[in-house]
Image 1 (tube, rainbow, N blue to C red):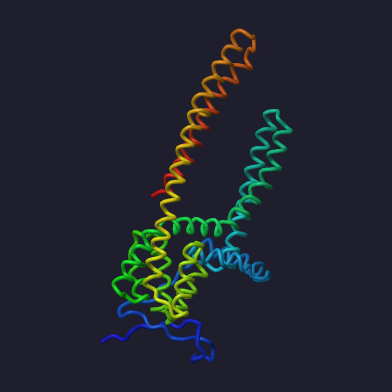
Image 2: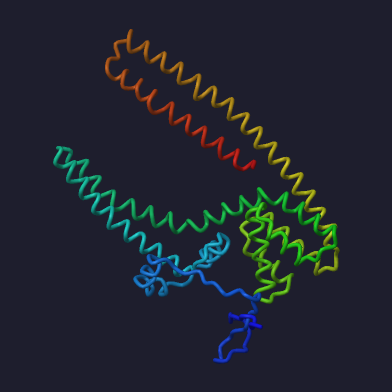
Length: 326
């Protein structure tokens, strides 16, 4: 019979080489997998390794990477940011020079100089700040997804608890229910800590609360730890939290519906009625007032730019609200 595979991770002082590692037992037939870097990330790490390691680690970036479930270290991610910024800078320098020369040949010397100077400056700076803030944005997005699914997930947890299922089994089953989205992902990480890393369930839940991007899910997990350590019963706590999140979810749904109704009324006023009256008034001024070509150009700008952009803006906003209600 084949032996159960093991891997070593940092943890205990039992190490054959004198280091701090411990064995982690895996299920029979499974093998450890590693999250590798892409070829671009490996090149970025070779290029900017010394620059990244020369600076002190950024705890906020490390926290956001964990909360966003981005499987890369903070120093490797910053090396990728530097490499991407350098590539963008080289590309925009070439593009700015080409565009500047074209404008200069067409007679617009000042515009060519402005574009040739601003494009290589603004684009790399913007790319750097966007990439640096990307883990935080992804973490916030995961937090919103958790908040949208936390009410039905707590109903599942309370139902499992009513059947006298152990806490570790509750989180294990919750992690298997992919219908709950990111909540199931958070529960799966707690199960990973208990079954793969050998951490007890309360410590795993406490660690899960620290790395969760959702404030509501953090409060729930911290409440589990507090209730268990103070000698309370978890079944009434799970039922209470399920009822609380259900009430909060109904209130949030009602607020979103009211917001959508208000936006619908605003759409009729701002996007339908106002441009219609504006087009009529400008057309009358163009015919009677002698506005000439300027009025005609303004009319084309309203019809071809302002009205479509306003409609697309309202559509995007309503779509975003509707997605939060799913």
